[in-house]
Image 1: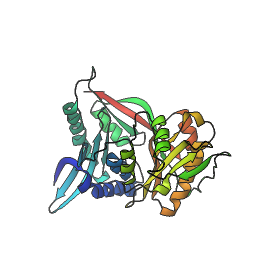
Image 2 (image 1 turned 120 degrees about the vertical axis):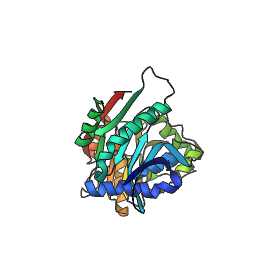
Image 3 (image 1 turned 45 degrees about the vertical axis):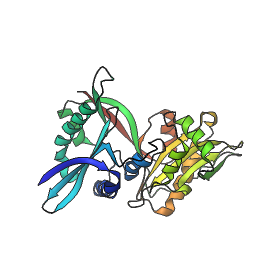
Image 4 (image 1 turned 30 degrees about the vertical axis):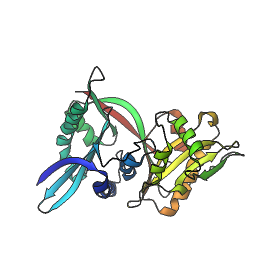
Length: 306
């Protein structure tokens, strides 16, 4: 019985890693903070790299070997800012005691000394008691609420919100719609810097379906709000990501209208779940996702200075 850690390969590991994440969900009916679409978004995200990478040093695969069989039992993700996630199969939960030191070492090795202190932290849903106990054991402290995990019950009827007169919900047509599409996305997410090449790379993702990439078109032809319902074709796990409304059009219910349309449209693909993991905890976001029927679980950031 041996464990082995290695870097994540986009081409070789996507199918195995998304099966691993889905198996966890099927066994526990719980979500951490990553679903298969997030793995693929590392390569095909609208705010990513124009030149697709073969592997991703942020992601590490942990495999378990027992004789001739090798299977993924954990996936760890470390962002450049020191925030990390660890997804562990429940049958191998004790592996967390090896994973935490490994991620901390990864953080030390990637740190370039920009900050006065070398910090590390991980968002954890409040219901993950064993994970919290392990973090305390390694000296982590609760930094308080940072976000919410949102799950929409599959037996809940789709919402029926509609946009106000003059506004229309429709799907995006790329590359024809690139200019208004990038304008609204880059305005809401100023860090994004979506280019036409990135937008077209986004459409190549397996999770991408232009029927589920929706915008609200304003009376002047600009785009006022948007949502992409990403659905993984193998596991049918779906997430609403990204979601946003242009500042000039807020307060009109456009976010509710475009998300409601996305939830209605995704039904025909028989999703195994509909989630918004790591959703903002702001008053506006809370009001929006509550109105759409999503449950809410608090996620706290657990922090440590290395």
